[in-house]
Amino acid sequence: MLKLNVKGCESFVDAAKYDSYVKKALHAFDVLESEKGAGNDFLGWKHLPSEVPASMLREIEDIRADWAGRGVNLVIAIGIGGSYLGAKCVIEALSHNFGKQLKKKDAPEVVFAGNNLSEEYLAELMDLAQERNVACIVISKSGTTTEPAVAFRIVKQFIEEKYGKAEAAIRIVAITDAKRGALKTLSNQEGYKTFVVPDNVGGRFSVLTPVGLLPIAAAGLDVKALLEGAREAEKKLAVKDEENPAVVYAAMRNYLFSELDKKVEILVNYNPKLTYVAEWWKQLYGESEGKDGTGIFPASVNNTADLHSMGQFIQEGSRVMFETVLHVEKAQRSVVIEADEQNLDQLNFLSGKHVEHCNHMAELGTRLAHIDGGVPQIEVSFEKVDAYNLGCLLYFFEFACGVSAYALGVNPFNQPGVEAYKKNMFALLEKPGYEEATKAIKQRL
Ligand code: PA5
Image (cartoon, rainbow, N blue to C red; front, side, top):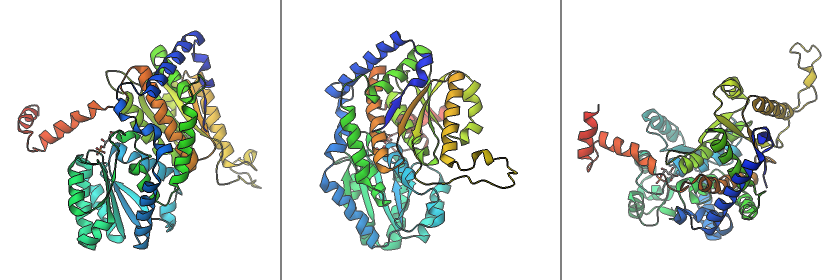
């Protein structure tokens, strides 16, 4: 199980006042566990790790094996927001940094589409697809989101032209609502294998449903270990306790926000494999808390790279932020810095040391410097970047998000604000039914 350490906040915190935030977080924990709070029809994610049906895992494995038998070496996963970030973050975290360049062929490459509307992106994706043996997973809970729908129309036509309609129906799997939406209608008509996004699981909490698990399995990664880690977190976090890491995280971030005006939380990593964990986390916290004119703005940095870009601001700019650092205890590969006779680079003081030791010292040094610069530090530490620890981490952030948002006083499970841009986009694209909105928006231009 991961560990949470808030020692790096101590010098900023008034203990008596902080205690009231622990009480608030414990109350929020009760609201989440009683399943009586706002948005309580979206709590299906809470028991996904312990209740994942074995039959669903078998179906996922059957698809992976069938595609392997057909020689599929490129899986295009189409989706946006919660319908892509979970799979993307796990795949990036568990894959070799240079797998593509090394042309590792033990599993298909999974690439993502439908998360933007760039024409160049889609054209270049088709360049890649031309060269490869392709399958597709199309994911949309609502089944009506424009970005994935546009990408899927193009990828579907490509697959049908390349393999014929009957074979296309085997190479395309849809993940969507049980009954509603254009994607469901289309899948029924075309005879695609479909998986259901449960009604009571919102997009950003769906990584442990087929939304995340199928692309992760298609990439040849260990979904069982991922679920095992999540199960461990589900069990440990269900215990009501002042030491519960979700309660501590919720209490501290709400304290920093409300008492010290820390409006920005930066998730910090020191391992490039965790870059997309931060992207997933930003959606989770941004969409869950950023509403009703309140919420902490979630941001991220990838260190040590960003110490040479954002480091100056974090050390000395506007004092609006705190940091949550992902501390990985050990590297799974070994690179030792050897002594050099000439020592022209003057690095012999590091000889015999592992590179990860230097990384850890950079992390520690940065953390202390940032405390001195007025940036409170929360640390989330775990043993290594593997499927088990990642499962634990993802579930921790989901559960803590529920507690934290309830402590803040918002409904964690809705996202009314994401509709605003869609209305304008449809009006500008002159979608049928938007005639009045089209007229109105054109007057503004
Ligand atoms: O968390 C959410 O609910 C959203 O980010 C959705 O995942 C995103 O908008 C995509 O929606 P859909 O899966 O309906 O296409």
